[in-house]
Amino acid sequence: MSLELQIETLTAAINALNLNIAKLGNAPAAEVVQEVAEEEETAPALTHKELQDLIMSMVREDMKRKPKIKALLAKHSASKVSDLDADNLEAFKAELVKL
Image 1 (cartoon, rainbow, N blue to C red):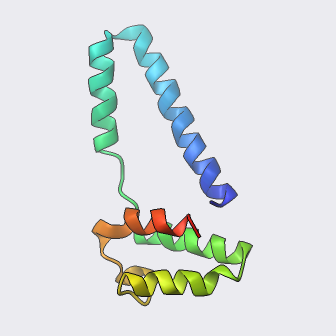
Image 2 (cartoon, rainbow, N blue to C red):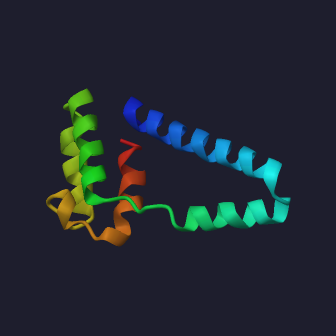
């Protein structure tokens, strides 16, 4: 996993934690749990552009990943990121970060 992706993930987690801590002081616990669940459901989906940016940063870090990424795309019947089905982007990303 690239450093940029790790920082982005940790920043999102910290922001969510700060929001939850602030809500705990002002609302009953049941309401906080419900609000957090609603926020998680409405989280923006991964886009083709974000996935493409991740791939580019991975390849820049290590050019040896490029053939592996191409093979992963082929496994998903795609020749480029934009060919991937939008519903499968998260699954593709999960496999990608394991490379």
